[in-house]
Amino acid sequence: MKHRSNTASKRTSSSKPHESVTDDKHADTPHKTTLSNGIRVVSEQLPSAQSFALGAWIDVGSCDEAPGEYGITHFIEHLVFRGTSSPKRKRSSLQIANELESVGGYLNAFTTKDHTCYYARALDAHLKRSLELLADMCIYPVFREADVEKERSIILEEVKSLEDEPEEMMNDYLDELLFGSGKKAHPYAHPISGTAETMRSITKEDIGAFHARHYTADRIIIGASGNIDHDALVRSVETLFAESPKTRKPLRSIPLPKRTSGGSLEKAMPTQQMHLSLGALIPQMSDRDYYTLSALSIILGDGMSSRLNQIVREKHGLSYSIYSALSEIRQSVIFSVYAGFESAQREKVTGLVTKELRLLLEKPVSKMELRRAKEQLKSSLIMGLESLSGRMTLLAKSELYLGRFESVAEKVSAIESVTEHDILALAQTYLREQDWHTVCIPPEE
Image (tube, rainbow, N blue to C red; front, side, top):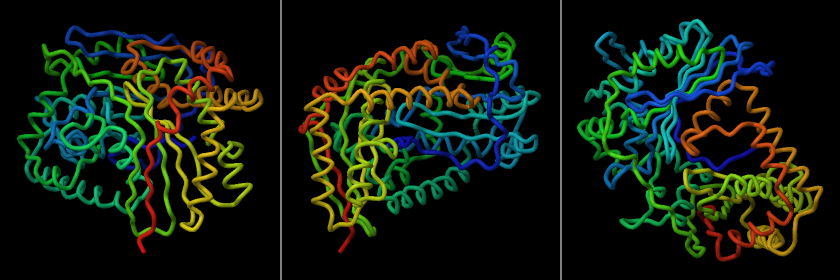
């Protein structure tokens, strides 16, 4: 399933330990413990597993950045891989890289609009080593001037590289339409990788102050999945994260984004195809509405049998890549449609896409389409649980977004409860013609 990206990643992993969980019928009920300093630990034990997935999730993302700081959260994510210096251990960037790779594991990280995640995968015997490494990276990073300048250059190249990827640029342009620009822009408008201007102006002192302000105990969630004893994990976290700074300030409160009438933006780039994206913002969704929207997205543009793929690609042969996608952020969901095609076909493709969007408002989807969507949603959910990384991510994001764990049975029940009329009502409420924002990137002439 394709999703609109809102993540900036540290690096691409090389080989990974086998992640399949073939027998989870004995999986323990997920456990949650909140430590006295505010750190939350969520885990589940799978006795059949011989490895684990472990993540340190920090409740800070690009939405927490002030003007002049755009990209600093992602900057810090890069820099913590450069070196650590706890009272007991000092690590160079090479030592950090070798810490898990030398025992067949791996380490990675990513930044989103809402949060930052550092995660590890390894065999059971290396849990303590992995937790020590994550703790040191989160609490004791060393922000040396030379490293700041190296990473600044790397990220500036990353920002430039995005300009060579029209689909990525479209995401930024769409965010600008949905969330505004300038001083009045909503925090979700901030580009995760920052801008060339802000990346050149952020100092080592800015980085240290931002880290101290946001990497606090109340914003840290430790998530784990594998053959892990929860109580033992909690004791280790208490010891290793004991120096994590506390704060008396409440968690940040991001205002609910306001829906605005559809706008449009067009910017030519040196591309071979024309790229078109339509996006609508849907705020304050209930869990059930999210599954309704997910089913709608599958029916409209997710998969070979979806309406857009069958009409635009298979019937008319106008586009190789066309799909719909959901991008979930804490208080909202962005529903988008993407198509790439020859410039000469712009009117035809736009007309066909618009027609399909209007049909969603006029009559309920068919029972057969809804059944297919439900089966895909359930399959995606259950297959995701065959990965330890998927299970760990589900635990941590449930805590981040909901403050509780939603069982598979609850999720399946919510999926099965979606009706054709639910989809029609949701479309008529949030996906009217005036709700869509349009970004177009034509080839430069």
